[in-house]
Amino acid sequence: MLELAVLGLLVDTDLHGYELKKRITELLGPWSSVSFGSLYPALARLERGGHVTSTAEAASQPGRPTPMSGSLGAELAAYRTRSQPRASGRRARKVYAITDDGRATLRALVDDHTGDDRAFALRVAFCRLLDPSARLALFRRRRESVAERLAHRDAAPTSTDRYRSRLLEFQDDRLLRELAWLDDLIAAEVAGDHNPGDDPALAPTGGNPR
Amino acid sequence: MLELAVLGLLVDTDLHGYELKKRITELLGPWSSVSFGSLYPALARLERGGHVTSTAEAASQPGRPTPMSGSLGAELAAYRTRSQPRASGRRARKVYAITDDGRATLRALVDDHTGDDRAFALRVAFCRLLDPSARLALFRRRRESVAERLAHRDAAPTSTDRYRSRLLEFQDDRLLRELAWLDDLIAAEVAGDHNPGDDPALAPTGGNPR
DNA sequence: GTCATCATGTAAGCCGTTACATGATTGC
DNA sequence: GCAATCATGTAACGGCTTACATGATGAC
Image (cartoon, rainbow over all chains, first blue to last red):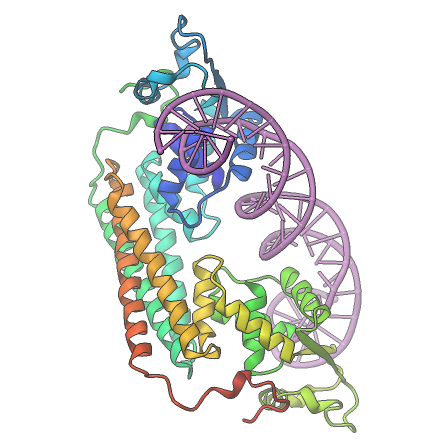
């Protein structure tokens, strides 16, 4: 799940750990975010596995602009420009970039259907990386799962406890709304709403065309 | 979280592990349920800690009806009656009962405010065990937390990705609805909607008055 | 001088999972 | 005889958390 978030975010732009954490928090919400204690080991794992590469951002050498900048994305460059004024002396950052292998892994991660609600949300967040049929399948799987949950609910006996019944009511409403949302998404997919120009984000080419 | 579910269910009636698992699944939904591999160790932990006691349900001795039945609840008796036909020869069950210590622990567990959404749902499911002021505080804390999340959302930049923006929209709607639900709950509490006769479930008396 | 922010990591531990081991009863 | 259901447990492992360790910079 952490891997999914990291790889998904690295598709857009190269990032260092600290910034990555901020973006994950933004994506998942301050609740159910991740800690450094899991992020850094995860990055190390991903690097060992060849899914990402890291480049030590050289500090205190203003004469040499962006050494090994081949894998550094345009957005990071912009970020670095914004924070240029006190570039030297800062603690060395490790900038991570996704590899072709990582892109393949990411596609598999988005396509699989294990894990909880948070994992599904993450999949939706990155589902543009799937081809249309896989994306549609993702939505349909979820729809079925939610429908099943609802059916199971209807069979359960009504609770006598006021709070418990209010809770059940609320949760049922939630499921119904998710179902409607999924139906909307599915309808849009079937209608061929996806722009004909394929997203090139996952193309195994070096140098982001942006 | 598992402890919370177990203790909460044991307040209503004494249960053995297998049945407990079924009820937890009913409460949490087939998704995000628990496995035996965590339930049984949890029960052992709770027993070691003195929060529950276990009684080996004697089988193949039809002559002696319910030995040590002092701590066996009425609802279990009913359950046993329903499955009486083949009572002897069945694998021995361990029936768990909550202790006064367990009731105190449960109250603390429901009152605390750590953990994720599932933990909150569980707290609501058992919040009748709190006194009105603590219950109100529970709802208000949650309300604040959800409101904060929403405020943070509004500040975030809108995504360019279609799926991501649809997701954000959906999640925002969810938060708004939870807010409205909480406001309802809080209003009902403030209006003194709680029945004046206190729930005796948490009274440290032996022998359930049912 | 000390606090907040940026920045990267390690170590211990918790809580949960899957897979395995055991064993009886009922129904096909 | 075989599978499903009931019933209880152990072992290995995974992923994530908290707390700790380190260290620089800028603002008050």
